Length: 136
Image (cartoon, rainbow, N blue to C red; front, side, top):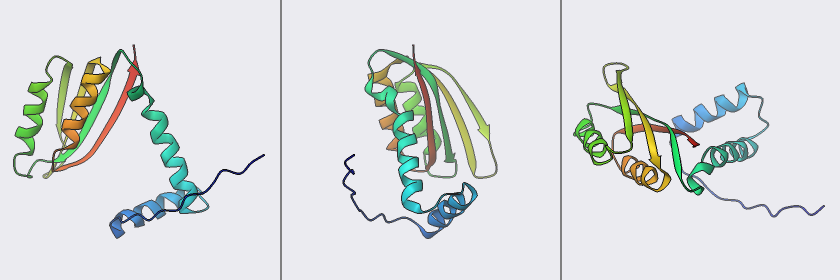
């Protein structure tokens, strides 16, 4: 059996994020960062396979954002209005003094949903976006 070529690369991340990653490694019994990163990458790719399909999908997009960030709320609202034809409903939750969660249920063509996600990812003040889609 032939061994696959190994590629090495550098990553610059905040120390606090690396500390959290190392803590996660230990709690999951991971041997090292490389193996953990390989597993995280495989999982991310598997969860994103819907993006390479065609047709209709439905699912959720969950956003965590800082509502004190200038115009974050209005920018998110503007994007939702722009893509109103694929948004089934939204739920807004105030997590704490600074953070809000927006859960958006989508139903539509994959190409349009991907454009919606590109627009969301371009916004500042968003701390995290999670997507869960299924083909229908």
